[in-house]
Length: 455
Image (cartoon, rainbow, N blue to C red; front, side):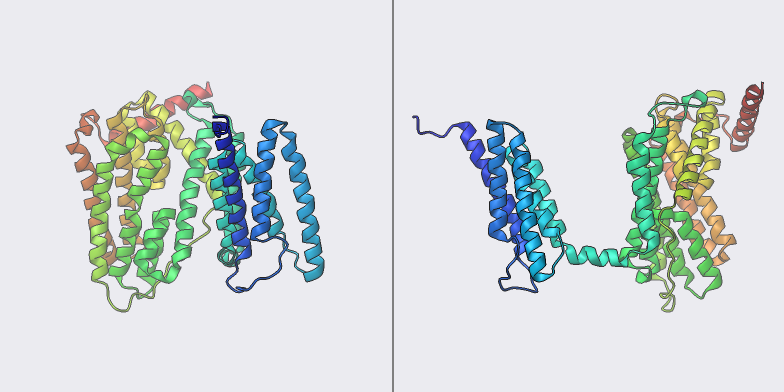
């Protein structure tokens, strides 16, 4: 009975096996090269990395029996040994890259981590690190295609999310404590990240991939900007209006799943009641787009869209300011005018920025706004936004484009409101609600509030 392996020994053996596997995984990637299939002398290969992993695992087991400082001293020893081998190899071959050196140190650290009770974390990190090492050609090619504007956009997105966001206080300020700097800036980061993803989606497929596909992806960044661009193409080029209409409708079809994602991240409880109206609106928008695409002429495929800077600090700050203003107006409208004031604000502000009013009313549920009012406010904002884009197609573009886009847009707005009505959620709409009445009351309420502040 004394010869049986204890559970502690079994766990240690499993951890050492994982540590060895981590080392071998790194060594396999470092030792295999398609362009050099034959053996080439290297500072560290499969065997060396396997031993480094086993050493890291053994060090972790030893640290559990003695003191955690053993891992630090062993890591220092491995670092000195690998650095010496790297220096000798650089002197002999002239190769100065330190990727293999860093990979060896990481293999040791992850192997030790595996024996210290973090097997899943160590294994996952090893796989991700090996993928990064293996994707060298693709990563270098991607970096080579990155221009200065896109690099600045990437750094700015990291700045506003990783640096600025954690520094902001998470508490309410201003009128009715409507402004929470942390939540406000988090929503700015959310919209900026979605626009950033949409921009690079267009870059990946290429601006020349075709108006419908480019419009579909560009709509993730800004459906309004895509609509304006294609309306200008209709007026100043010979591009097929059916093709441009298809692109505009597809760009706006992405608006509805985008709203659902934004609302889900801010207020998940709104996703289910919004899913049916938004799905219906997306379908009614996308179906005419596909019909127009099938009716396109043979000579309009050469038109392309230009994608602008995916992220600028000025744009982020302006959106943050607009969002703050609408959040304050929404809270005051709810306090002074009730549901009618919020619905009137949604109908007007949806023209300026649909994201801002969507985020604002979503954050007010609950307790400031009831569910039916929030849902109706979002759909009213979408309706005013679609009407605005129809006007853009008529004024910036041509009558033909306006009709091709406007009729489906109106059908989309009607579908959303009808589906919401079928769910019974419009019961909370005030009986005397009218857009003019709401705007008039909204103006009077904020005039009174301004006078109180002046006193």
